Image 1 (tube, rainbow, N blue to C red):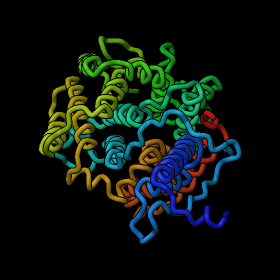
Image 2: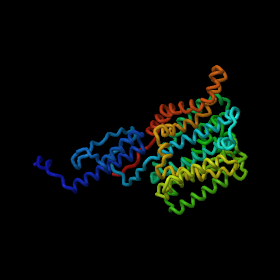
Image 3: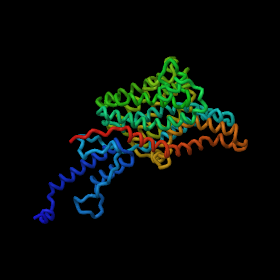
Image 4: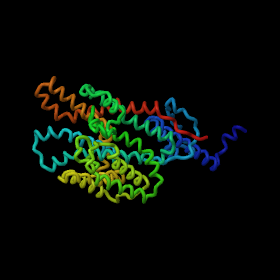
Length: 442
């Protein structure tokens, strides 16, 4: 009798129920891995889920699935196999925007090296103007940050636990390299007072309207990370609010954010440019003054994730890119803030459809450089200072002449190494240590 039961052909209804149950369990495994475990575990779980839903044509009998992959959970994430009640959609990555981040970071690096270039080369006026507007790349960073965060976390911040895990993920993403950059630069800024050091270590140096000079203390590019930290605090609340709004309201927010960015000259509000601040306010790069750019990116990402208007051909992407280059090359003064418009349309266009540009930005090299772009941006000042010290004290003159122009290349190589051996390992470990397992039902 037992043998007969094992040999009896399985009815179609039972097979469907069994497969549906396996699909639900695989989806739950992927969701848990994405929120709690490291990236490798999430990829394994996702592969298991895709294999269950789309079994490979390998001659395996119908209904017989590949053995489930083992997932290595962190100590805090050993969960039961209960099935969540709601599964947010699994969205594809946007690797082209990762490659775009490297171009923005390197644009800032070239801007900071402009004095050396101007002393030795006679460049056309429009080229110099383009390089002098390198600070606007920070605006592109803020737009990208808002766009990618809203795309990634749409419908995923529905509980206090999820919001906490979001903040843990952001802390794990930015603080290891941030702290390393401060340690590398410390010998040059050992004289700073204790309040300034504490503000910088707490990433609030740009939040103080009474001491705007603190923004560029210790490692001056870090002022934008202080601003970004403020954005991370605001994001979960704004994201949950905008998710409940209609498409029409999202479009209105997009329009208002764009107008505020242009009229208030927000892309020009950075350290060392207080004369360009909105409405004559001499407050330095306060986060609240750069918030419209981030909210523009968040609104754009929500509109994109809802299936908003997509470019029907690639010409719109290239026109946006051309408009960006033209605006940055023209001597239009503070009206260069108009560049947020082609910045936004370029991001949207690259994410919307495959083009030759997005294919180049999605290449393995550009994705690697884009991953290391945060290190490139944050380590540029300390590396430049140490190269200068080496040239002045320890390097022969012949080598010194080559070392200075080679500094950007050295910076990129060093940043890739730090990205692989420092940033990624610490990001995984911090998330494993501090993240809470998602709540499950059952």
